Length: 359
Ligand code: SAH
Ligand code: SF4
Image 1 (cartoon, rainbow, N blue to C red):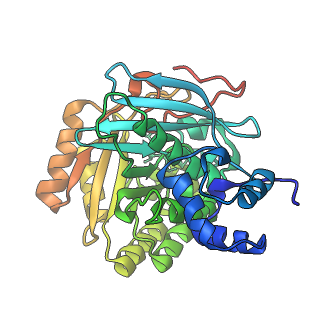
Image 2 (cartoon, rainbow, N blue to C red; image 1 turned 120 degrees about the horizontal axis):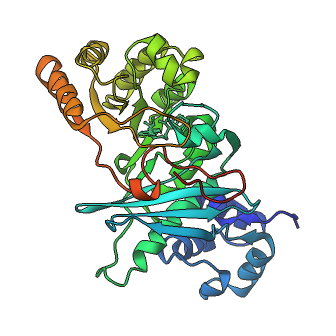
């Protein structure tokens, strides 16, 4: 027997079939196990009466539910956003956010503890990189939200998790294999059954990762954090642009769109006086000309380590008007959610002492 238990959430259904066969059981039990874990959202083997006692005993001995206990749950004043500080087995912590919009619920999940990319305006970047999450730790965040939705007293029938954005802590393409394994598990049609086009992966612009996505075509929505339309301006905000310069990034985006036939979302965190002028709107219009694209404008959210100010309301409108009228480029201004509880884009961070960072 192995000393480290297998995290139930780490394996795909096919891998569970193989594992059960390796233990000398019939693979049919994998389907039941999967139902319990992802349809009934069971969190103990005791809740699996239809599994033979021998199978359950082996699971008890060699596997564990990699649950992520809630250290703190915080609700935004408007009631639309709930942020969970979740504890990992090694004592690290991550944040997962449940957001309600009209007619839909979205889970914003993390892919790493901290982030190595160092974007100047991002609280996760400001805390630095600790480690990658395992597939099971990524899946467990979605399971946690699915369970929270099911348990709501005020929702009849219970809400189902249908939308996931990989926009929490970390850079998902810096943890490619674990993220893709987690997405396979989330998409399994006999489980949480998330549709690929309800999963959005946001990247800072990890060029090899984008090219790999172009080859593997998992069918997700891809969002690329652009923030600036020239190499120099971008490198000042996103240091990793020195490693993967803007021209290489745009070439990779073009390859991705050609290979997949998909439009990319380009995110643009709007900082007053830095990247919100009419001239910069025209520069991004020219940069994206001919590409299937939509621009998502995100007014800067405050973080302790960056002194920039959010763009003013009319600058975002002007930006949108220029993109639309002069370049026929669709754009949206992201609805701000959970700013009062530091759950907005780029605000997720865990202070070094394990407590929450306050702003
Ligand atoms: N690492 C990925 C995904 C997580 S961040 C990425 O960078 O794309 C999700 C989005 O929030 C990114 O577009 C990021 O640039 C943006 N963001 C980061 N900090 C922000 C802040 N303080 N205010 C507004 N948006 C921010
Ligand atoms: Fe990392 Fe994304 Fe934050 Fe940049 S914006 S530091 S890539 S999490």
